[in-house]
Image 1 (spheres, rainbow over the protein chains, first blue to last red):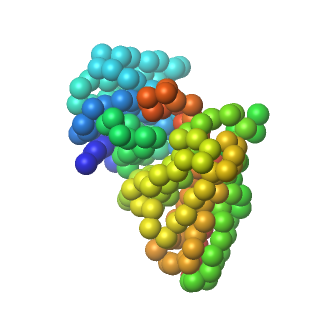
Image 2: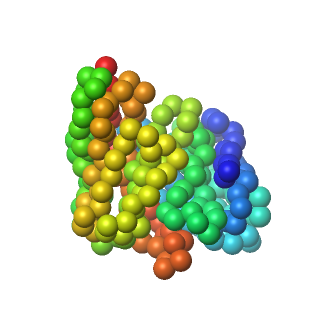
Image 3: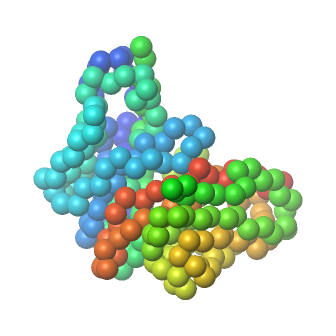
Amino acid sequence: EDQVTQSPEALRLQEGESSSLNCSYTVSGLRGLFWYRQDPGKGPEFLFTLYSAGEEKEKERLKATLTKKESFLHITAPKPEDSATYLCAVQAGVRSGSRLTFGEGTQLTVNP
Amino acid sequence: NAGVTQTPKFQVLKTGQSMTLQCAQDMNHEYMSWYRQDPGMGLRLIHYSVGAGITDQGEVPNGYNVSRSTTEDFPLRLLSAAPSQTSVYFCASSFGTSGGTLYEQYFGPGTRLTVT
């Protein structure tokens, strides 16, 4: 059974204080790892997809990296508007169809 | 493009009632999925479809039915609502490779369902 664990559950940062969110996974045959941002009362918003170990992607203050066991979402000099819940999901296995398995998320708060 | 739309936004049902949650996308995506989101449980897959006429069960399919008669629409039916189905429901769609590897998924705004 695919498992995705995100840590920490919640993170409070001061504006400008860089940090990283972790997503560790146990799957059979990773096909893709996805990062999403979710604001309260809204649907998840796509950020990145990583397909192979060693891959990195960046967007503004966010950078996602992938190893064979985990992914990190690095946030550089965060701003209050980066406050949200960040979700990690994996697609795995030859017979997975369009199944994604999600972690429970990290709730990020950035204080001004 | 409207993206992924869901109706209704809010719904209250009594135990035993049935209803259909609507989902539509205008991006010509072949892959569509329904998830429910509960506190402490994350997003869980209910049913998904890899194209018109093709559906399959996800992690928590009991009590729900789906059909996909067109590329655009993927309704979710609650057959006999139960309090355990109180949740926020999200529909999502995406392109993917012929081998089934997904590209980015676009999510709708959600339907907040309460069953009393």
